[in-house]
Image 1 (cartoon, helix red, strand yellow):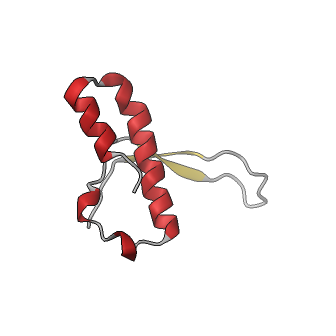
Image 2: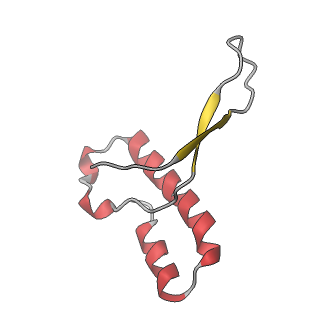
Length: 81
């Protein structure tokens, strides 16, 4: 499976590192990943956590802009696996 999102490099929160400043990615394109093609038994716990976290952000940011059938679709596609 291939997933592509546009991301922006942004300053990461300071963690008091001796190595200086760090960057992190901010996802710009928010679209659910189709989980119907995933074999869940092949995913590690951290991969499932990442996917569920990503879908939580997608739902939080997009749901206020939708209603009706579109909102129902978004909720189904971003449900935790």
